[in-house]
Image 1 (cartoon, one colour):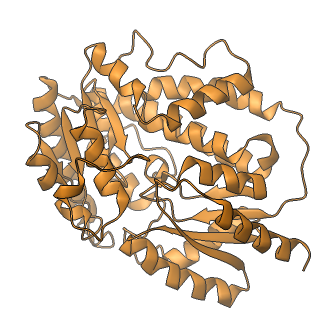
Image 2 (image 1 turned 45 degrees about the horizontal axis):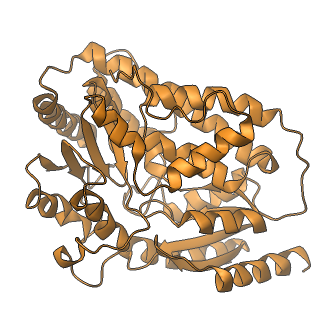
Length: 391
């Protein structure tokens, strides 16, 4: 399991709630990923995993840090020549972080979630000496063999991680890591309960920062952070304002700029979303008894969320989005997609038809992680919101 005698993110400790949340925002907004640097400086090893979902428990059980590779608002000066022109930004900026030595890894894992990402591990492998692997999640999760297949794929990943760690990953260590992550999932569900039930208690950007940190620091640290701050957030005395309740859909892979989330939070209550959904992919506790790899595989298939890059006929994405809107008692949806993101842009079409059929209002937009100006978009969102408020 991950050990952290020296915390990777001590800045929030012994601070007021507002100051602690400010430290969280600053850490997430920083393009330097200081927490990963601190982990390495203390002698730890890091496994970077690309969007969307990855069994971080395997890396954690090896005593290494699982780092969510999520791109950054930076120019891909070094990475640009490794990719074609018409590709999403996150592919390029993620590689840029590694080529510029802002993030140093001991292993990189990608997934064939789209045509562009299916070659990502190979591109990294041509530029770095450490192992660069592709984790092949089931293309057909409805198949009766999908759980057995995924269990074997997780076991293959365990063997590769063992080589990097230099020791065996035992079933006992895996079970202990699953318990740590179960607690983390419980705390994240509590955070989203607050977003849905009392969104005026926490700003959209603060909630986002708290989730995002899960992919940057050891989970034990993240559990302590949430367990300390969530009760304080519930004790706030902020009053509800006259805002519409909105679900944000489109943050499953490339993340919108932090300032975009801040802008939306000024305009409406973001009561649910799919931002960093991979960090919250499993929606319930993973069983602790029995084969831990099989338990993780069952959870991925049977107790999980949805995204445009998983094709499960039991989870029609349009119906799942409508359920998310209804459960959050939202008034409308913001259907966003990263520029050049084929899965996200394709799903927008299906979503708009489904929401039209249900009579649910929606706003369609695109974003890119290195956007810097939001004036026109903010005016459009404000107009959309005012039309709903005063219709």
